[in-house]
Image (cartoon, rainbow, N blue to C red; front, top):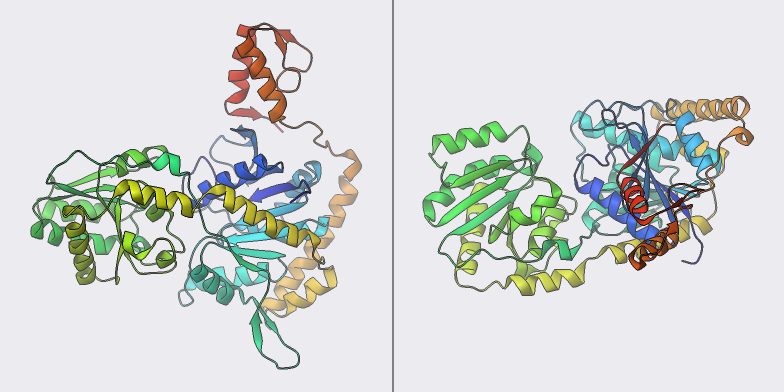
Length: 489
């Protein structure tokens, strides 16, 4: 892609919270920056983390003063975010916003507001949702309203694509044959990882086999299956131990199971595990166990395979798309079949039929963030060059939501447009403080080379626009600036 874009990643889920969505946004942003694009992140506040922060290697993050209500998600409010997003998107000269996660209210609101400023929109769905429970029904209806007017949709697996197409009603009706076909702007781009961070470090030769579980300890992650099968596995294989990392509402039940079966010396519970410590935890085991009941992609499975572990997983969602069959054993989501799959994995590992280093090299060729960024660039280019939807067409699409939701969403759309016109009068664009200076990687690199050469240098573009400093002072200022920096706005 030749044209340099200004991109805004928008989601409720971002640093300092740690998870698959948060890591995906950060890594995609960094790799797009390396390709020459300008990228910022917009999210809600986290405690006293409000305003503008910088993350290495120069990623600018806007923390809006919105308080999350549950699971780091904010309350859908539609209009409250418009003054903030309008100011940020205009002053940063944004061409395209990329919203992430179905449960991110601020992502949905960003897509709603972006068209008013002529900004193109892309949405990435990271999870699978059902169709029957109340939470899924409400979430799906909100998703349908958002995706009616989005320019492109990205899913992390083909199973996730099917789920999102059904939930978001991403169909087009052929006027001649009256058949429904999937919209052409739905793409599949998988997750990735940095293979160098998950190099195999097999435990020293021993008859003991350690099964590693790293997961949020919640119902949808299948922790009830882990509770049911772990005692059976320990009883059948005296040389097998468990290391469980993670936190969640099922932790109490895990502790009760361990106490009931007196397995304190066989099942180690680590509690919350930071992302930078995942590799060291994986290096303690030979088998990775995943019991999820629903999974769109399963980045934890990919990290474990890259670290050289043999994987046992439930056959759900997009998991079968992640690894070749000879690197993973599948089981149905029931205790008996999981026990069978674990028995098979124990035999494979005991006989030395799984080579951790060969597995690492294979995974290294399957997934990397450079490929993900390149494929995402293609989607961006398609969106930028496509026809833009006007307000009347947006209203017509919104009315297709149904006899009740259609008029409600259309009223929201009209009020949003009127509120935007009021803001255009109350806070004219000409009065905004536009961003004119950016982080210059090449200049910063040159400054650091000058420092290594032992010569005095200026850091006008990076720290202080007018000061000539000595080498010790330069290093002190660079270290201060290079760490997480806060600005009031």
